Image (cartoon, rainbow, N blue to C red; front, side, top):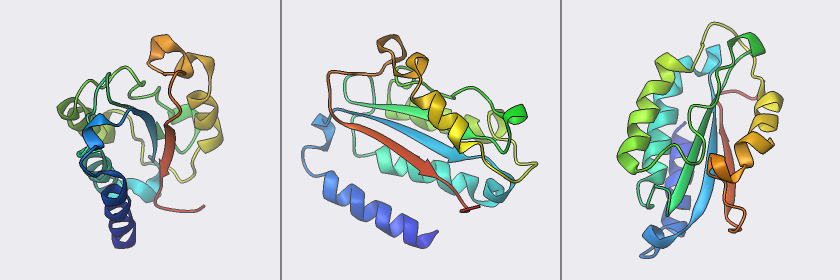
Length: 149
């Protein structure tokens, strides 16, 4: 996990200079909610909050979507945030604090990543009414997981 943090802070440092507050981009974080992720889930959410801190999180700057990837479809919650849900850095932090108890189910192994990739690329998630901006070229999808299995 330390390597991930070091790499992440290096990446943030490279992208976030004096102009970071002016960057306009959409990012969706897919977060592992499987049994293997339980002991490090708080690290995942802290990482996201720290990663986004230099940017102007909100509808006019960096829009953030959040999806917790469940171990199976029976436990899969709907997206925690579409790209028009989170309106500020404080709102992002508050939403991240809800994920562990309200969206994650750590009782099984496995991850329904393919299903969630379909969700995040669906018309419902990428429509303008869900906050997706087709008029910009800066879109990022990040999957944070604790295991490769």
